Image 1 (cartoon, rainbow, N blue to C red):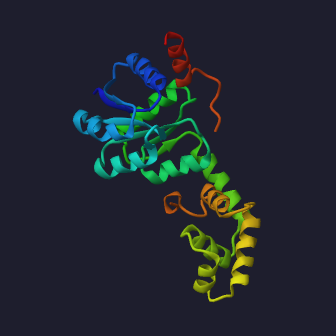
Image 2 (cartoon, one colour):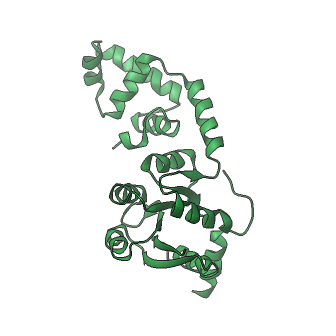
Image 3 (cartoon, helix red, strand yellow):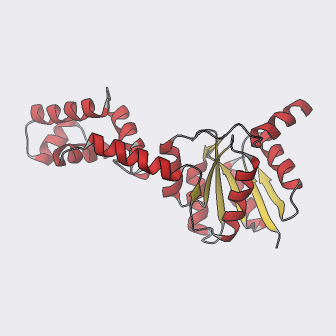
Length: 233
């Protein structure tokens, strides 16, 4: 059975690379293509694909948010998140978003194809290269940080955007004590301010990504097809 594929990516050369890749495999056909988040809902509704690939960073929006919207609308739609960033926090955000697969744009073409085929038959099952290693790394760092109950409470208040006086009021302590707790939390997270503290906490799974307003082997990958396309442009 042919897999009907839609592509949502703001990079013309990435779309070219995917077209070149798919053209070599008879079990996949591209039924829709667009470069902007705003155009994606109509394109998906009109083409009814089995799988959609989405760039995590689109010119006019957040690819992760778009993926979340699609998951809410289409329970059986396979969603492959493509990204130029392979950091653990991006991977875990993709997992929380409900996508079917997470693939770096530098991944071997075999990995991209495997992700598309996986998404076509197991839309609700997440796969990503290096997931087990990333989980172990997150667990190790989380254990090392070992926030106290008080520090965890302060972190939640910071996540909610509360000021130090508001935190003091909520915890029934003085503002100076609240300031001390915040300072200790910053030190433990290696942060100089609230934004850095929240980013670090999010990266290591101390708070969920949605709560806050692996290096591939040097084999032929999607980026190589993109590079080839640039020579034709």
